[in-house]
Length: 387
Image 1: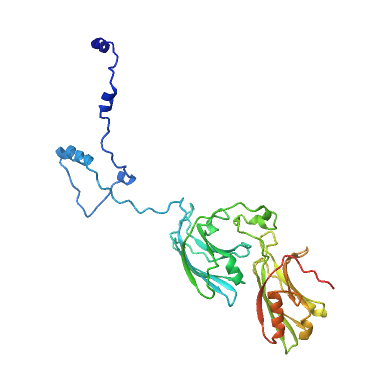
Image 2 (image 1 turned 180 degrees about the vertical axis):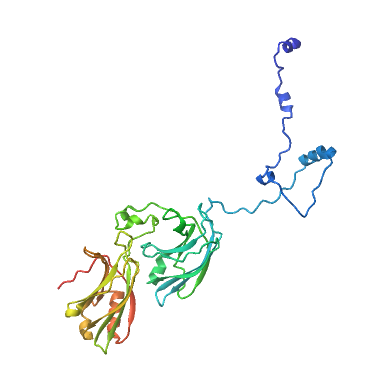
């Protein structure tokens, strides 16, 4: 029967025990070859070892049986998908006496340029939350190196203790778009530093890894804001419009001239009112009730800026007792040619004010010939006064 089955061409049946006994192992597992094995290596300090032709099979079998030590691979670097991109060295100093924040950008290490291969970089800083366009500062561009050294200080004026408690400084290392076809490019990396731990009048140095920017959807409430169509680069959720800017005023009662000297020094972080993302600001002063012909003044116009510097002074004559009962209205406007000027923000000083505004007014009139400078946040609506 067995011979008949074999002659009939049928394959012999193999039992399960016989099947499991068959050695189907392909041999010892070999390490996966690296791509570098396919390229020649040159070792000038070592002599190559030649094997006789008759000993090659034996040597090959020996190599197969015993595992070979593999060369240590190159240290793994950050891939394009990793979070950490490079390091940025910088120093922060909160000058509480002058209400200023100083950020000194020192150097960056390990930058990875984009596909363009550009190595022309600069550092851009923003204070959040707030008007990102108004608080944007940047260093000069360092060209032709992946280890740029800036050693440049960026200063935020009007930075108070309240700002240090709630604000965050964002630093971005960006490509210079000078040779790029696109107007804007994503930054090479960024970082955010909460400012609440800064000690006033004490510098603190940092060396922090940069990370990729995490973009979020633009809030719908900002889509209708004037001039916001140019803010494709600033679409973070931290952008908030609770501030319309600040103004630095100096008050001094001059005993020699017999009147009040009001200095309009500068404004910071003003809201953009024009389609180009900036404003053409100027400041108006009005002493209420009317103290004569010279109760209204205004500064010159500063073109295309959100951080104007005026340094202009105006004089209101009158005894100290009369001035103590009056109100000084300071308003910031955007100049528009041929149309009505746009109101940006204002502040009211006088006996009817409160907080720092009242203290500034009383201390000025209480101390003759003593100049007192103070930052005041601007209100979003003009003050309505009765006649």
